[in-house]
Every structure is written in C-alpha cells, then in structure tokens.
Length: 194
Image 1 (cartoon, rainbow, N blue to C red):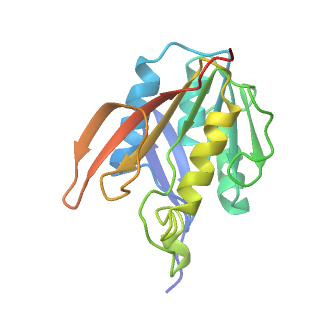
Image 2 (cartoon, one colour):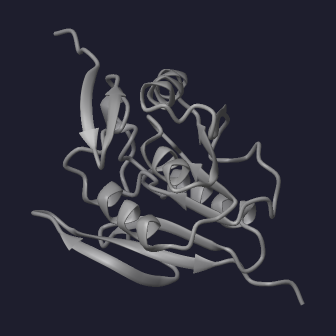
C-alpha cells in the first residue's frame, strides 16, 4: 500500500502533510499548544523545536514573530517550507534541518515551543516516529532540554506531554482528555541569571 501526502486545514492554515510527518488534525497536543501560543504575548523571535510540517511556527509567524522551525526529518522540513509559501508566510520565518534544536544558539529566543513525541515507546515503524519518545523518553528529554536552553532567561517554553509520559515539569496551562490519556500543555520559564 502506497501512502500519499494529504492536505489539511488547521486554524486558517492549509498544510501539506507527507506520510511519516505528524499531522495537526485530530491531535490534542497541537491544538493545546496552539491555544497557549494564541494567548501568549508575541515574541520578537520564536522557535519551534521539532516543527514537523511547520504548523506551530507558521502560527507564531502569523502573530508577528520572526519564527524558526527546526526539524530532523528532511521530508517534513520540505513540507514546512512549502507550507510557508502556500500560506504566504515564507518571508516571516526560516526552517533549519537539525536534531532537536541542537544547532541553535543558547538564550536566543523570546518564546520557545515544542510538541515532542511524548509516548514512552520506541518506534517500530516509520509512522511511529512522530509520537514515540523512546522507551526511556530520550527523544522527548532531548527536545525539552534544548527548548529550555534556546530560551532567553525569563522567556517562556511551552510544551505538550501526556499523563502516559510520566515526566512533566512546569505549570499546567491547558489539558484535554483523549480516549486513552490526558494531554496537557505546560509552561516552563527559563530561570534568569543571578
């Protein structure tokens, strides 16, 4: 069976979603983080760690931030760039190929957000990659650690996690119950230097 790219509509965006890339449609985590971003003060520079097809970075750019989306998957990154053009936002953001934000400077963004793969399982098939954070949550942890590192001191870091993740830090902002778990958006503020 051959899988084909799909088009999706999400909060006014038209998105190309290739096979193996995380779709925002029907996912509580993307919806929760997008709601938090919508209510957050706009930042001059916003970074999405693990941008996938660019959904959240595009929403940040629509709100006036210069947004940077980092992604490890080349097909997802190509889709993110195409989605920026498709939604006439390509002059407001950049996408960078790198693992979990490791290529970005520390203390460089006024807002950082991530919707990491948070299920504590290893991926067995390519379609599991967007949700499988590793049985030891190594992928989830790496993305969250880099998100906090990239944030300026005092800047907010917003991320999503499930009660199945078994690991969460920060303040719960919003939650939604799914048939199998409870997914929440969390806020962590990078400590200011002393």
